[in-house]
Image (cartoon, rainbow, N blue to C red; front, side, top):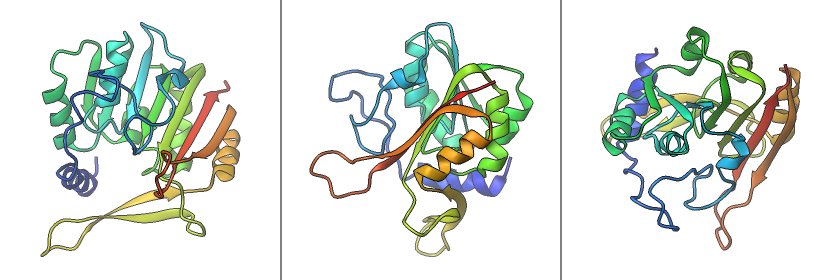
Length: 225
């Protein structure tokens, strides 16, 4: 595990408040793919059923992980930030079938023997890991026909490949730097197909009506083995 990266995400966690107690529907757990509340597709895109298993690559404070567990899914979340995981354990102490680990995505995927029915990442490790290194172990840990899906901010036009994200550390310190990987939807589709995934779709979801802010890149595919 990279101490520099885990420290960066601990710093990031300080800027993120706990998830709202309820969403617009009054639900205490829910799944959210985008950076906007109550927006975007639902959990159904993972095609999960009670008793099946799902892996959250970069679970943060655990909202999506907890929601799947309440649906009867064996829900595993990993994150580099101990502080984010502490938020998750504080918020969801009594949720059964939820398992949390402080771990790097590549290390966890290579060390675990578990085969999952779905693997997903919401602004998480799929954005901050070289896809050439991430996609083979993701595919190896998915059952045939299992879903891999992820969301992140779309690439800035002309700025593709490995980019730098800057996490503020305070007025007297330089920002922490982490790498991210940005591509347009067409490149994601080709890359996933080259790594053996099928039924690949990638698009930029529009932001909520009336918003002038950026949309959300959403990618879904299936393990073709």
